[in-house]
Amino acid sequence: MGAQVVMGAVLQCSFGVAPSSLVVPPTSKVMGPVPAANILDNKPIANIPPFGMCQSLANPTVAAATAAALGVLTPMPCVPATAAPWVPGCPKVMVGNMPALDSNSKLMCSYGGVIQVVSPGQVKIING
Image (cartoon, one colour):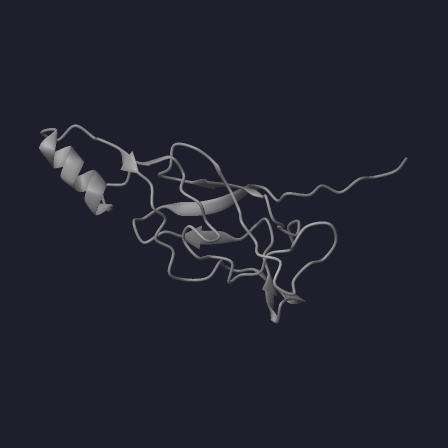
C-alpha cells in the first residue's frame, strides 16, 4: 500500500502542463490535522482542480484550436473530465465508508489523461 492521500496532495495529469492540489472537503472524514481522501474524491473542479493547459487532442477545445491553427497542437485551458472513481484505492482502509485513496491510485480523465499522485500530502517521520 502507498501512503494515505490527504487534502493538499499534489496531482499531475499526463496531458496537463502544471500540477494541481487535491481538495478534500472535511465532511465526516477528518483523520488528523487534514481530511483524508477516499476513492470518490474524484469530482472535477470540486476535488480535482485544473492542470493549467490541456494538450490532449481528445479534448474538444484542444482539437478545435489545433484545427484552427492548421494542425499545430494548440493547448487550451484544462477542465478535468473525471467520471469514474480512483482505482484501485485501498479496500482494507475505509474513509467515509469508502476505500481510502492511496498514493498508488490513478484517476482517468475522459480526454485520455491519467491523473496520478505526485505527493500524498503527508510524510512519515522516523525518529532516530
